[in-house]
Image 1 (cartoon, rainbow, N blue to C red):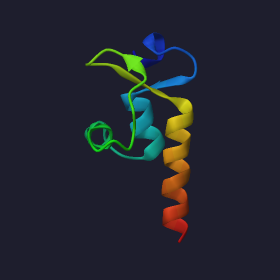
Image 2 (image 1 turned 30 degrees about the vertical axis):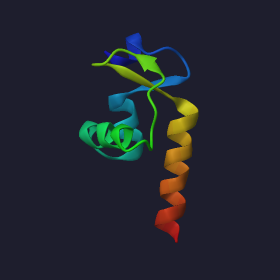
Image 3 (image 1 turned 90 degrees about the vertical axis):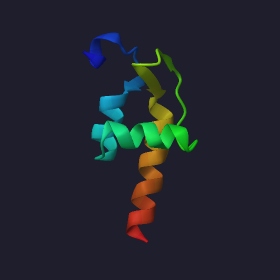
Image 4 (image 1 turned 180 degrees about the vertical axis):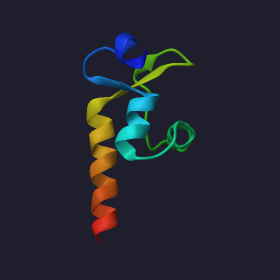
Length: 66
């Protein structure tokens, strides 16, 4: 369902959670803490920019490698 409503270049909450190997609740927590920013959508189905998700994923990978 998220794939149908999310425009190109953006991810839904489930997609971000899958990419970061975490839960949708953890994604909401990242938003609350200011580590990830919503880029559109609605309150119940927000979108996140693909670039922001990629940056967060890269940061997690470098932190895990250290």
